[in-house]
Amino acid sequence: MMPGPHFPAGIYPILDLDACQARQINPDDVIVQWKKLGWGPYQLRAKKLKAAEYAGMAEHLHARWIGTESSGSANRWHSRPAIIANDFLEVAWHHSDWFCGIHLGRSDLESLSPREEQMLEQILDSGGIAGCSTHNAAEFRTALEEKRGPGGWSYVALGPVFPTESKTNSVDQNAALGPELVAEIVADPGMSSLLSQRQTACTAVLIGGMNPNGWSQIQGVLQGRIPDELTVVPATIASVLDSTAQWQECLEPL
Image 1: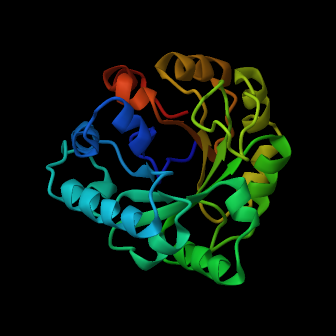
Image 2 (image 1 turned 120 degrees about the horizontal axis):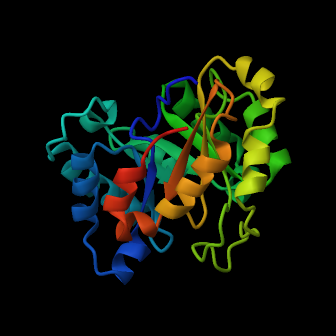
């Protein structure tokens, strides 16, 4: 299996400001803990903020990230911008000094203007991370085949794996796939030939209701079935705030 260059800690943590507020947790404390654990990069999810507010929060979090000592782990994101923007493409494009990449949901991706398409290409061309959401086998394979930047998407997210409430009333809301179907999709024997044609390594990010127990279940189902050219990591929103220690114990990228 190829090493995972984008998420060296084996996890894609998502800093959801609404989840932090609901738990009365300071986002600063969360990212400081993540860096000390050797994690990064992370996604900044803030559905209630406008672009200027989102940029201001990113600037603040970046300063805290850079000002925090790392654990000493060999994680290249500890000395550079480590925030992956959620949907705020223009903000991420304008502020590469705070952001290392962009994540786009299906609806946002399908409605990109020509100018936004250029921004996305420039992020990839400059070595940034760019990933997209998929919800079934056809979308997952299509995303892997897409010709974007020098080598395609940095990662392709697939989910929801388990039931989740994080997308209530969202146009991207989909039924949970379940571990077995997820395994069939990412471990499809035909995937290896497709991945071998890529110029850069790719990561499959599994998202949706993911917690340490769920990830352990996924690991068991996928063990020995993943193509060598693919790295699989979990993305987590709420449970990464509630079960940080448990996550650290079970992190083994597939």
